[in-house]
Structure formats: C-alpha cells, structure tokens
Amino acid sequence: MRMGLPVVLALLVALAGASSCSAAHGAATPQGREATGAGRIMLDFYRTHSVWTDPGNQKGLFEGIRADTRSIVEAVQGVMIHGGLAWLYDLKPSPAQTGGEQIRKTEELLQRIAGLEGAPLAVRRPPEKRLLVNCREFAVLTCSIFRHKGIPARARAGYAVYTWGRGKYDNHWICEYWNQKERRWVQVDAQIDDKQRDLTHVDFDTLDLPGGKFVTAGDGWQRYRRRELKPELFGVAGEGRWIAMGWPMVMPNVTCDVMALNKMELLPWDVNPYWNKKEAEMSSADMAVIDWAAELSVAIDRKWIEMRQFFKAHPNLCVTKDVVEKDLGPHPERGDPTEKYGLPPSRVHKWASSLCVTSAFNLSRLAT
Image (cartoon, rainbow, N blue to C red; front, top):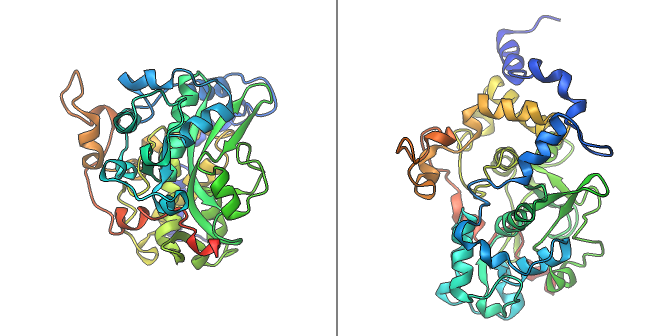
C-alpha cells in the first residue's frame, strides 16, 4: 500500500528521537524487579523536586508529617478543600481562602496556607482555615511531600471514573508514588476524604487506587481515537451538572500529563500551541505528535527515556514562556526568567480558568 506524503511526515514526527532509545525499553522498567540503569535514573528523577513542587523556604511546614501515605494525605486534606465542594463542609469561604487553584508553585501555595494558619501541615485545620483549590493542588502538594521525604512521586492528569456517577470521564489529577517494598507505582487520590467518599459512594481504597479507576490522559486519548467512547463522556462536573467537553478536554489533557511527567506540573489551563486548535484544524503531523505523546505517557515506565527526548524535541508540547514567566523569576546567570526551562512564546487558551474553578467534581446533584 502506498502512503501519501502527509502520512509519511506524520510517522516521521511520531518516531522522532525514538530510534536511539529502543534498546532501553526494558531497562527503564523498574516495575516488579530491582531498578537498574534507566529505571534507576527515572526513579531518581521523580525523587527530586521540580521548580513547581519545591517547598522552598516553607519546607518547615512539612515537619511532623510521617513518611507514610495516610499521614501525608491526611496532612494535605487538613489544609485544603476543593473549591467546588465548599458547600459539603458547610463553608462560606472568606476572600483569604479563595484563589488557591491559580497557584502554580508549591512554595507560594504553602505561603497562602500558612497565612490562614501558621502551624505545620501535620496540624489539621477547621474548614474555615483551609485554602480553596482544585484537584491539581491536591496532587501536586502530595507529590511535593513524597519528594521531600525522598520518595519518588509524580503528578498525573487524566480522568476519574468514580466521581460523577459511572461511565463519565471526569477531568482529574492524582499522585503516583513509588512503593519500594512492593516494587510498583501506587496511585493516590488525595482529594477524596470521608465526606467525599460518602457523597460519591466510593467503596475502594483511594490511597491505592485499583486499576482502571483512574484513567490517564493518554489512555483516554487512545480510547477516544479508537472511538470506544463518545466525546460527550469526557468533561467536568460543575454547578450540579455534567459539562461535556469532548475534544477541548481530551487533547489538552494529554499535554497536561506529558508536562507533569516531565516535572512541569502546571495548572490545568496553562496552555501550549496545540490547545486552541479544533480537531479539524489538526494536521496529520499534529495528530501524530499527540498520538505518540499519549503512547509514551501510557508506557512511561518502559519508555521514559523516549518520553524525555520526545518532550525536549517538541516544544509545542509545553506551555509558552509568558504563561509562567512571573512565577519563575530571573535566571541567576542569564537574567532571562524562562531561558533555562526552554519555554516557547506565550498564548492564551479560550476556556482557561473560568470553567476549571468549579471543575473536577461539584457533586451537589449526587447529594439528592
């Protein structure tokens, strides 16, 4: 069968940077055995902070948190509440409690938390002393504490299939950490506390999510591309109703997850040059890039080196530099606040934060 030029170009783009890494697939898989070579490098990569998870001069707030999953998650739940669920805690938030969903850096997040109550995170706050955030902050702060304890961890973007009824793919973030004893990555949903568990009728361990409960963005993309799922099943819950998103959710979520896997744990609406494209506007090469990014994210432990090279070779998978410029500060040697992070120029995504303030799952309808 003869292939046209667009198809050939798409394949070349998708395979860019992969050939030099093919021999490393097995070595990059620590699952189920001693991590060696690339697998060890990957774990060390996720053991250290990114600029976004680094607690900076607020690291003292982590004192008193034991290095076990339950203690870490209880500390996170004790200082934050999802903004779309304030009603569940009988909370009428003060202005000082709002805006947490817009904070990228963990150091700044901790500053806001300490501004409400200065005690270490191990001291649980009443709802009126907690910061309002969204699912991303729960995942990233959990990730930050694990890394602070020397435990490899990474934030993941994707979909919860256990929050808005069943069969809906609700935009959500979780944290994965490496369980050294069991030689596996464990998925943790730090947002689901006892109140939310009762509301959503969750009957499984959210500190060790069973397989299939959380669908990574890459996995969701592949199901979308195979037409296994209708576009309207992908979306967010807000204001007591399901907001179907389809393409504007499925494609950008892949890039969110890819950025997070490369330790660019940014906001769900921090945009890259693909995000404003409608599906019909995507070229064969564009689709091939997202297809391959999804494949690499799904097989991250086997293809971690390929993921790193692919991400570096495709700056359009990352946000543009003006999006995060104010958060990074000047580079100590060069003065350019984003040069050392390799970020391209800026643009703005049309659905941005207005939707996501109430996203993830405002489940008031389920309460009735």
